[in-house]
Length: 186
Image (cartoon, rainbow, N blue to C red; front, top):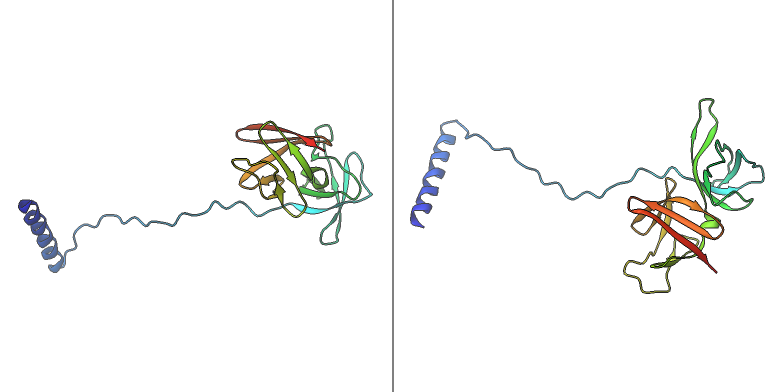
């Protein structure tokens, strides 16, 4: 024990003498410890509003929450781009981009009015309410308590899903773990 102490003391003395002679001992790279950074998601590009009266198989009129009226092109209606359908007055969440000629094109959309309600599966039952609230009647290990749409994806508490399909009585949500199937409970 004494040998280790004196050995360490000797190394420190040599290092100090070399510093006093104008020489600096070789420095080891310093590691800066960054605080844990939260994963940040890109800003929400979703446009919110109500479905207007001027729509068809390949168009959608959206009266935005800001009061603007926007016309969108729906390029391929064979694969529903807007999950939950288009109905006059329904609340919508649309992610769009411009095509080659400058028209607004729907990339994905969710009919929020159709999304609201009680959904059930074998292991989970929850109700999606307006205002971002989710409730559950059962004591589940990880119940959903809030929801939002962000960049076209449904965020239920800490879980993010793409809306694979949304109908009057069915909801299919997909993430990297698989597809989850829910039916509407009345």
